[in-house]
Length: 85
Image 1 (cartoon, rainbow, N blue to C red):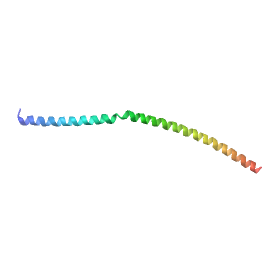
Image 2 (spheres, one colour):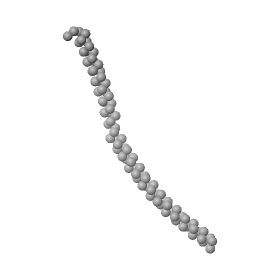
Image 3 (cartoon, helix red, strand yellow):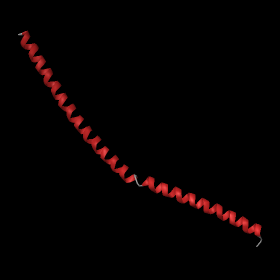
Image 4 (tube, rainbow, N blue to C red):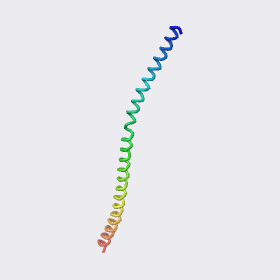
């Protein structure tokens, strides 16, 4: 083989090695980024549980308020009836 052909092969091999090192670096970065995924999933799960609990609490409060509205309406009518009598 002649020196120019060997030089081309060496240049191509150097480029491949450079690309490989860049890919390894990107893979390491991806691995670092994906390490947080389980923690994020846990946080999302906890927030969802809190949202559900809050929604249930709000529904109970609204039900209680509806009951109070009925009671206040009855008491108002009774008061008006007593004043009229």
